[in-house]
Length: 446
Ligand SMILES: Cc1cc2nc3c(=O)[nH]c(=O)nc-3n(C[C@H](O)[C@H](O)[C@H](O)COP(=O)(O)OP(=O)(O)OC[C@H]3O[C@@H](n4cnc5c(N)ncnc54)[C@H](O)[C@@H]3O)c2cc1C
Figure (cartoon, rainbow, N blue to C red):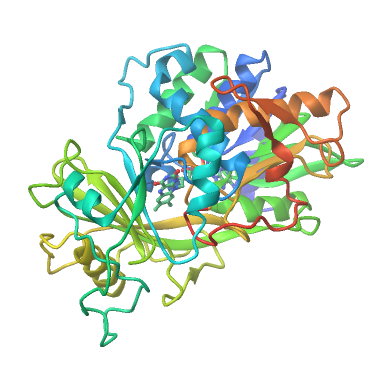
């Protein structure tokens, strides 16, 4: 043993600290999970390798709130979660004295692609009472004059000779007035954690988990890179893009039929045309062009990708090793595509924006689940589309932990959660690691 290691060991306490639950990761999901476990009366420790709550991939989120997903459980989750964001202080039970996030309700316009799932989605909207309107191209342009009403499908690389062709027909779509975005995703995580702390949760930053200790088929606790061991009968992997690595560490990766892995993404920010403000604009999901965009704060447009088939996906082997700087190629592709829909967009010469990682699952639906290692749970696979559900995910994970404590085997008897807005049942089996792949858009749209 090196002398420094020896001295470190000598300085560690003899008694291993222990909690009812350890949450690995202090992003928006880990903070929400910490809140619900602590609110349920458990002693909770949330550990994070980073410098601040919410400083992982959460800080890069576009924080879009919309309700159009491919499956009933996903739609219900997003709708219930959206209403919790609307009365966020009530949901937390506290007002964070350092400032609360704001839900900017811009509305969400989802534009069509051939043979998409609009009929199924709007049928489910009707069933769950989610207000929406079908809009023709003409109606879209009357409502949102900054938008071109052309149908540009299919998405193309910018060097395709057909890229700038005039559209042959008009686009159509549907509009949900209650869509929008949260103005500061990192602060949202901090708001959750403020509330969690009021219920006694502890947060330990700059603490990297290097081992998940197991004993006789159950989780025993974690070991940090400092050598410190901490025990708990419940450990929850909320490691964001590091989740697959943590599942490997716990020895549960092999049993997963649906897995997740890090996927590099860029979000670009450009000056908004004058007629495209949070008041006059809308969140737009435009898979026929290959982008989503929304009004940003300070008079900007924020642009992300919907993973069109013509683009290569940038999978990352090691979540700690990726280029965090936007590239000219992706910047050009995403901004020029957006300029088709928003023709008055002015295009900067150099890339502005960010690059970060999704924890993308095989079917772009999340993994909220137990594992075969008793006491080890995961909230991961968030696939670039789950920020909006953070207000529900703490409830989901607390329900899974409670069910396991009561002897319910979620793998054979899936836990159900009742939405407090609709009274409808959300089947957490839909987010199981053992599911057959869900039928989704195979993109961030979920
Ligand atoms: C660019 C981008 C845009 C997005 N846009 C949207 C959107 O518009 N709408 C939407 O709904 N969703 C969106 N998402 C998805 C959403 O933001 C994420 O799903 C969510 O923020 C993930 O939160 P998290 O807490 O799971 O992960 P993170 O915020 O990444 O937190 C995980 C934490 O775990 C810690 N950690 C990892 N390994 C260890 C370890 N070994 N020991 C200790 N700590 C560890 C990390 O330091 C990190 O802080 C987007 C995501 C990205 C990246």
